[in-house]
Image 1 (tube, one colour):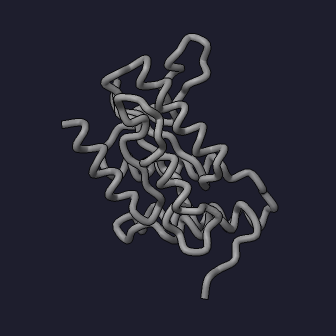
Image 2 (cartoon, rainbow, N blue to C red):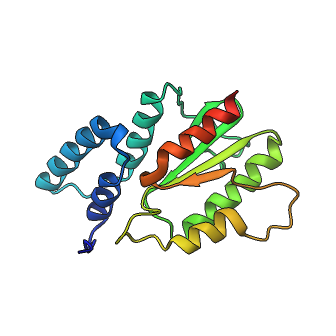
Length: 174
């Protein structure tokens, strides 16, 4: 039976439950915090998704930092930098506005740093019953006809397969 998500917190919990088994301690820690937030009536959980990704990167011995803006104007600032040329953008779910923004940021980032690697984590991608429409993610982040000689996004994943994305990131760092 599919779980119906009615709030953003429900969506976060559904995504969190889908983490691969190897991250069970991260899942437990964040589930407890999310349930505590629900009891308190807290509505803001956006940073929680980023903290989960940060904890996964730390678990995998990938040092994640908050990079400064790529352009002096400050409009392009990925959520995480894993190296001077490897960046990760994180979002809770993938609606067309957010996916367009990720695509545009990848274009701007790689226009400024041609050797950069840009990855995206759409937490609810691949989650049954989630708000993300998976074919949209695949179109925007994998197949969008940009007409450019490079791919704006080098890889993407949801929480269910984040371990595979971590493997791709590690490959770029070799």
